[in-house]
Length: 388
Image (tube, rainbow, N blue to C red):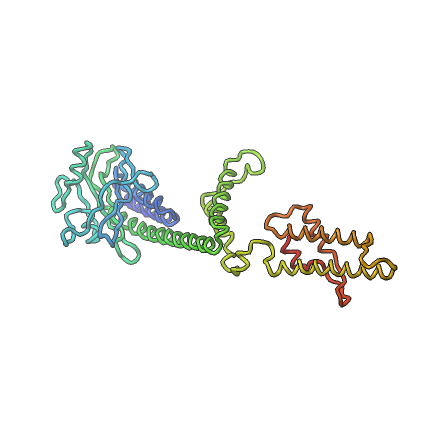
């Protein structure tokens, strides 16, 4: 290869590496990100298989996260839905660092290991891959194992690539030129993983806070316990159904997964204001509580007494018997009784139909003259609002 071709190849690899770094940093879903790291690393080095481990510090192990083998069509972990049923790789065995396993060694030492043929390599225990080959008929040959260092130079994972392939599909050793490039890719991937993990942790914390808030609301008001969860479920279900509409006013509306999640959260928190509502208001069973409601009833009773008194005065003025009720008084008392009965009914919780709202509005317009000669409303504006 000429010097110019080599320079062009290096420049092409660097440009591709930059593009991969941008793609990695833009992916916020952790499972998708881990899959992308293995897929792109395999594509970059032209290899058949790849495995990504993450360091679990508390347990001192490497956890299998992603496994891919293109020639067999095998893929597990990540978004595949297939779990990796392999035990984690211990970083410590019998109190000593585990340097016999190549992936554990790379995680501990933080160095890249490039092996042309695992069947001829010394210093590591490859009984696992060899046993796998014996069972499946696969042939593990070349292997490159790279530490994944984050921005603090801490190893948070290990990327293991297996069987580099020639243009003809033959298994060959990994070209040393890829070591520095893959180390760079692994470091970018480590930073992206940390960022995605941070976003995941923040989302988990936020959702936990939302759930605790909903539980606090339910605890404050047993009468409406579970209401917020039911609203959230129904609202999201309606939004999901709208996504399937191909005709009508919702045909052009489509909610993304993120928007559906926002709708779900909004449904859960729609009653969050209850947290600041006083207990006596939150737990009242009717639109007006006992004391305030009794004020309205007493006022209507007072109006009745004033009507009767005015009726007696009219009788005296007209020379009629004091206890005789004229037609005007009878009509006034009948209307007042209707208003009284309506107030008894309207205080109960529930939606007020338009025709009932008209009756309430009419009562709110009525006035009477009190004993001091002042004009007063049957019900105040605040009472009118509460009854509505």
